[in-house]
Amino acid sequence: MVDRELSPEDRELLDTLRDALAEADPVPEVLLEAARASFTWRTVDAELAELVADTAVASSAVRGPDAPRLLTFTAGPTTLVVEVGTTGAQRRLLGQIVRPRRAEVEVRHAGGTLNVVADDLGRFRVETVPAGPLSLSCRFPDAGEPPVVTSWVTV
Amino acid sequence: MGDRTTAELVRAAAGGDQSAWDEIVERYSGLVWAVARGHRMAHADAADVYQTTWLRLVEHLDRVREPDHLGGWLSQTARHECLRLLRLRGRELPDEDVALGRDPGDHGEPTAPGPEAAMLAREERAAVVAAFARLSARCQALLRLLAADPAPSYAEVSAALGMPVGSIGPTRGRCLQHLRRLLVRTAGDSVERNGRRSSWLTES
Image (cartoon, rainbow over all chains, first blue to last red; front, side):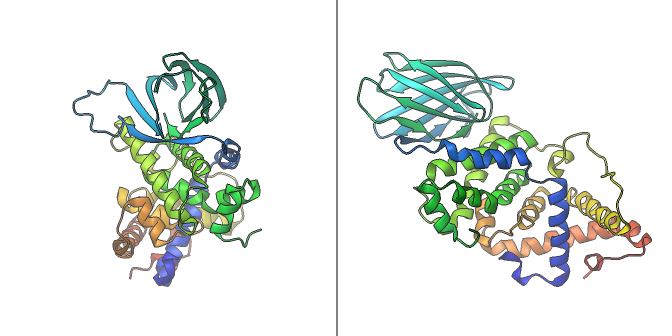
């Protein structure tokens, strides 16, 4: 523990600060509950597609401030590119699966799920999803491949 | 329950044990929240970072290479998500309320009446929070983490702040010294008026 070498005065000050912050800014109970409930999102059969690029954290010098945000996820040979548009607290998604193919897409967000279909060209669209944590799960009914689920990211 | 190591909890949770997961959340919730709030995130953004961090752990349960270092992993994940959101918002420094961990407009003291001792303790805590809010962003981030319950390890603090382990101790010393000076200057009077003087108000 870090406070092993603290003077008694420093330790008391830090203890007081701990009590003060616990009172002024505790972890909200609703978030604690959500953290426990997040375990239900555990998937055992799907391949995890990691977030490999996010234009929000790339250098945006040449893109301009109003360029849409692009998220790129990959799992093995499958790539998923998602454009995120913003309208207030709502997000609009335009997705592209590469190599292009049909898929059943489950959009997972803090408040639940919604389902859309990617067409033969691997394109899909979600008109509105709440801002916050987001993950997409893709099943490929034609190909007999394992499903792919993206890493969670805040949109 | 209660005496399982973090590595045991991670393995159990990866196998589907909800109670092990709950215990992990219980153990590290304060740390993850402290990282999010320490990056001067607005309350709603801190909430998103907190939630996303736990969801990331759910998906990575069977991939966490060193379960004993889970606190460091969570700290780093939360920190990266904070930086992502801060870039996304293109935001500079928020106002004092945000840094303080209050919603704007909420400047009220707790009003519930209590015994004398509780009133004094409450006054003392309010003074500490007010002084804390005047510290530099760096000091606030560090002290907030060190004040998390349970207290994080050096490695976890280092991962959460991107700060070398070697500079944590000296920085902590300077930040606590600064906090003490602010308290002596601004709150010392009222605390003394109440015939009480805490040892942390003693200038060293």
